[in-house]
Length: 173
Image (cartoon, rainbow, N blue to C red; front, side, top):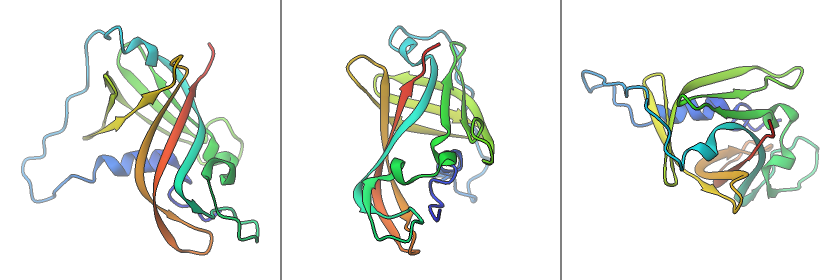
């Protein structure tokens, strides 16, 4: 599969954390880990969430199947390794983002940090960076989604700019 952007979703998250860094600024001030009790509105996020959908606002062809078959459904074109992605949000404000950990033959990656949900803004603090995702939940709070503007490398090598929506579903305990 020639989809470098989605080969490891964890890498995307880490890279985005450093987009706003300027090497000429001194000193670098890293965000403090998030602490404190959860608000009632944050409790719904506690648990493990598996990726169940990746869609684009424009058709792309990322499947190496020798056919010209672009689609907005990136998830169905993705490898099993790309579909092996989970967030786990804990009551103590820590989180992990795991990719490739439950599928044989995948590159395993774990990112961890702290989190906070303020209405629809999900703030993730990791290492010396942070990122805010504008999340939306479905009616029964069993799924959440966020959208990012990314460049997708298609199977033919062309980079296509698209708005990509990632959807996660809460796993049963």
